[in-house]
Length: 94
Image 1 (cartoon, one colour):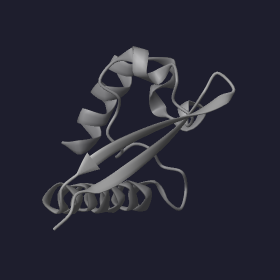
Image 2 (tube, helix red, strand yellow):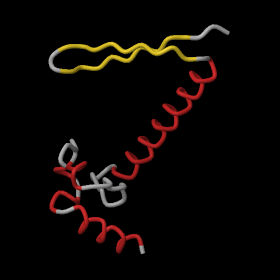
Image 3 (cartoon, rainbow, N blue to C red):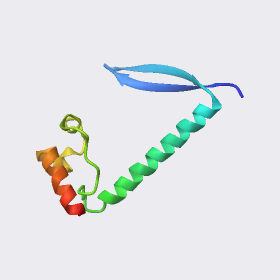
Image 4 (cartoon, one colour):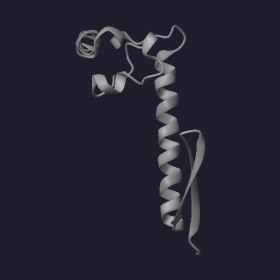
């Protein structure tokens, strides 16, 4: 089967960048599986958070640097310190 092209659009510095990649059918299927699994994990995390925005069971970032750009930081138990929040979460899980 003929290779296919995947087009990725990225917004950067006020303009769209277009990146094209040729992939085989096998690679395309792998990409679709990965996207499907990512979507399932996002749904699973969303179910943990709802209905009271309870973020205590959601996995935290790997580093404080990642928290700086998080869009839900204002809801997160780690908003005042990642390591302390991870410790509290571990106590809740035990």
